[in-house]
Amino acid sequence: MNDLAGKHIVLGLSGGIACYKAAELCRALVKEGATVQVVMTEAAEQFTTAVTMQALSGRPVFTSQWDARPGNNMAHINLSREADAIMVAPASADFMARLVHGRADDLLSLMCLARPIDRVPLILAPAMNREMWAHPATQRNVKQLRADGATVLDVGAGEQACGETGDGRMLEPDELLYDLTRFFQPKPLAGQHVLVSAGPTFEAIDPVRGLTNLSSGKMGFAIARAAHEAGAQVTLVAGPVGLPTPRGVGRVNVKSALNMQKSLDLLVPSATVFVSAAAVADWRPATSAEHKIKKDGSGEVPTLSFVENPDILVAIAASPRAKSGELYCVGFAAESHDLEEHAQAKRKRKGVPLLVGNIGPATFGQDDNALLLVDERGMKELPRAPKLVLARQLVAEIARRLST
Ligand code: C5P
Image 1 (cartoon, helix red, strand yellow):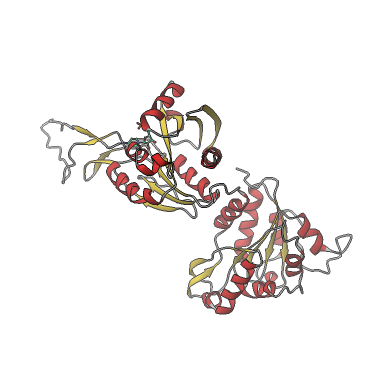
Image 2: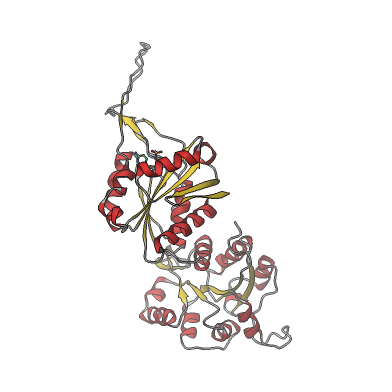
């Protein structure tokens, strides 16, 4: 995706076993299009080498403020002014304590102190033993660093290198990559609670059989991620799909249309935006057998009869909060032809201010898609692109409509 194209990241490593993850993070940042300048403390060099980090970043590593390579001999000034962000991963307990006091006795702390504070964000990924993390001194330092303008990321929980289990692990490289990518995204949905439905539903015939459809959930999951990147609190109600939950997003798994309706009805009163991307089954079997329907060899086939599922979106869009504008509803339409005409008609029928049309067979299961946005003013095409790119554009369109 090249989400970090054009960004110059100074990646700082302080001492900790999590330095091995910094190597993978460095590679991931480069893969996303960033240029990466690594700066290591002396303690970090006990855990990984400058040679490794140079090979992964493609640039000589800086480890000392006495490095004579820069013409002006001021690595701390040059490096901090070139950066779009400084990310210290791992940030050890000692390194954070030194930052709190404005210490500048090695290149990395010196560079953090010398950075133009309103232009170059400092992002810290703590990593330490659980007792060190929980210690009042560390927690006090984290609070102070945040007050001083640094972004201190969460820590992971689980098994630690020391053999203990608890909070304090450094986030995984893919989590750090997401947090950094999110950091650079605009936040037009800050303060909003976005509810997204995604995926197919599964309508049981008996305990082992059922009816479903080819929706992969990818578009809805991308919208949930894009809304979270844009600063919203996000809850995803997902039909049966095997996709990983986007970082920072709450997830409720459901099976049938009726399950989905029940979950959405519980969540919708606290939402300010509802994006109905799920491919909800229009019909369900009138009855679902308690036991597996057996083939008895007689050649007789079972007869299925159907009842209509409730239209979840229509009901939510007709609620008083949606009518008063407190809840902004967005519908989806997967069509096979005449997209414009069908999308406009569906928008009116569903009673939503914005409807997103796409061609079903061209989107189900694919990683890219093309969208047609339809509202009372007309329509707008979002040309074929990866679903995450389209999701970000859609989120920006929703945010623009919320602000007017
Ligand atoms: O009527 P159709 O299924 O084409 O409408 C699609 C839109 O309506 C989607 O936003 C889908 O999530 C929603 N829908 C619903 N409940 C249904 C059927 C569709 O909420 N029973």
